[in-house]
Amino acid sequence: MRIAVLGLGALGIAFSTFLKESGNTVTGITKPEYLERFKDRKLSVKGIWGEHQAVLDSIVSDPAEIKEDLDLIIITVKSYDTEKALNQIRSVVGQNTLILIAQNGYGNYEKAVELFGEKKVLLGRVIFGSKVSGRNCAQITVSADDVRIGDPSGKISEEKIQKVVKVIKESGIPASFSKDVYQILWDKILYNCALNPLGALLECSYGELAENENTRKIMNGIIEEIFLITNANNIKLRWRSPEEYIDHFYKNLIPPTAEHYPSMYYDLKTGKRTEIDALNGAIVKLGEKKGIKTPINSTITSLIKFKESKTL
Image (cartoon, rainbow, N blue to C red; front, top):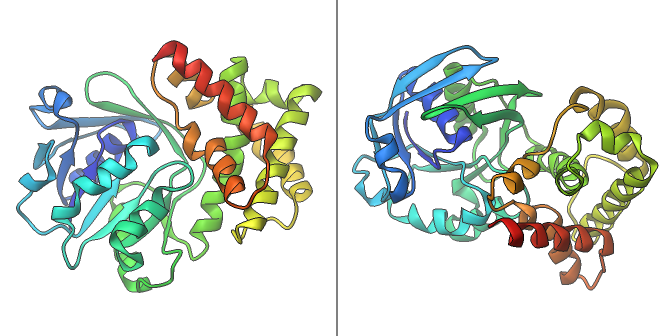
């Protein structure tokens, strides 16, 4: 398969390395200022999935330099770069090209569909943890589930989706087809909205947040507001009520990740922009569309933006 991976952070390096190592033609797309770092085209992966190395076919900053027809473009950039990234690839999205959104938060899939149409865009829910570790190397730290891939619109044939799933799975990245991928992504949005910003603001682990009645009250409020907003916007969740999800959240989701610190915590520590606008910030905007106030999510968003302003 002829594949381009847009964004060569930890996630992009992981996808690129595995897919090239398994025999695909892979082009990496990165920002101009990073081209020198990748001039030898060598990438590697280490961690829980073993050690892997690959030399990509090319690494470019301008997708227009890609001359071959692409079968698949995987988007791994941060959510705040999505719109720019999607506009960048317009010239290389051919008749048979599929786009796989492999990002965090709400709005990335929607922006891609707005630009390219439902018949071109797949949604992926990625829940393995990766971080850049050394020169052009990604370390896989944890894997909670397969990369779930599907088409929320139902406009793309299952046969086409299964081809993408097969290529990713055969590369060594656990992957599976999912008809309810949109609901599965919202599971992750719920989890991230409740934990990431609060852990970043208070500089503590998920377990510490869950142990304290004050932070539990805030997280419960975040979750309750999300249920209110998704219901108002006709976004179907896999949980019938906030109470049902909250019970699952504390009993099943927190314990395996109790020692974990959120990526947003590390973003603020290292002076990087966070993805708050695709998480709690997106909930606030969805509420505004319906005239519904979301005071807890709104406050959390404002606090993160204040912290960002002190570090960027």
